[in-house]
Length: 400
Image: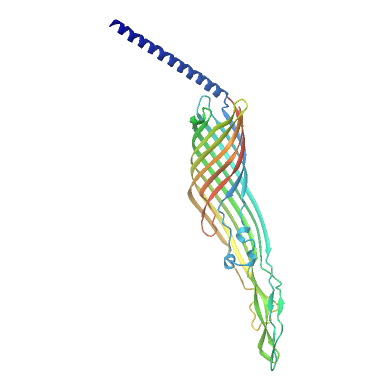
């Protein structure tokens, strides 16, 4: 019996010694890991300053000014090959810059940041196109006392032609400011050096656009009959054709803006895939963002259209049409303002090369602001503002 008790006591002692040894090794490993982590944290800069540039494709839903004569002459040769809408197309790209400062205290997973992005687009248009005239046939007839003799058909090319001339200027700008606080939860799948930061904060956005357009057009060139009395029979007529048309002048200008602020969320992640800390590390970066912005949407629009009617001065008609018939549409002045809520979503993907306290990044990014701008003329129309394109930045770390 005593031997059995001694054996159990020996087994218990062995178990306690084994457990103590494993626990000591685990504690030592954790201490060493913590020391290595703290050593890396002590080497990590606490402040990062980032400067960059981007080239964005811009989609703002800006409507082209369409005076009535455009809709009334849809198949006019004056609008070929460039239509009035195409001649007023806004700038397709904006060039801008960005800056960001972020602060991560020592021995902390919290990151605090402030950033600003700004871009501007300008465009000038000048279109002048003249349609090619098609020869028209003129018929001159003679009716004698006893017989009728037709004179051979002649060809006449009008001395005027349909044309379109558009001169315009357009500009736009955007500014986006973020203040965020986030926590780095890490990415276990990619190792201890991967980062995954979930941020919450406030986003401010401001968009402005201006346009001015002057348009002249002759879209409806046609011909009128000029009647020539024949000898001996004054009530019989031969026929000659003359030109008649309207010449239009239209002007338009608009100023539009949106200012909004609201809560935002973002997720930024980075995972190394090549290199080492001594020679430099290549990482793949990605992220997404969302916000809801509450603000004011404004639009100020002015436009006016007038026209003059012309016909051939050599008209010999018995009852010629009156000269100078046209119209002068009163100037339209509209101002609209609305309080709106604008959803915003975006994302990015890129690569970064980092070496101790220096980083170079490049990638592709997009941001969409739904219903942010009033782009209508005579009636309000909410349009989505979108910016997407490549970016590049350089970051310098200080402190640590």
